[in-house]
Image (cartoon, rainbow, N blue to C red; front, top):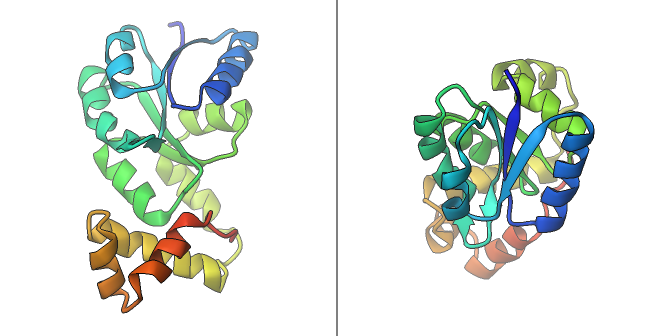
Length: 175
């Protein structure tokens, strides 16, 4: 069976570089920058790389439809803002794995071929999270519980709304 990967990412430069790298490895790929563009491209897709943030839309909304139309496809969620809360949400919606950007082609292919349980077992032996990272993860979890509502999250965290917004605009800190 020939492998065909759908890349759903609004970053055209990243998608183009990934497509070229996949082609050099003999893997066919197609690119869409929105869910609307992706739906007609699903024919023959064996794998999908879905960006979490597609402008104003979350790539998570595409996962159930992709899973419905291509039940055997391996789905990898790729994001620059990885958190435990969004990882859990992606897996619950049907993603097979989750990977933080920046990621090279080898890491993406490895993640597509590996399920989340295997990844979690490998991560189990990694370093303990730093306090700033644990804070960021906690904020992301509470934000997910409040369905992205910043005001409700700030109240739940007993934090000023503007302080929370400043923390949310920062990139996540390392482990």
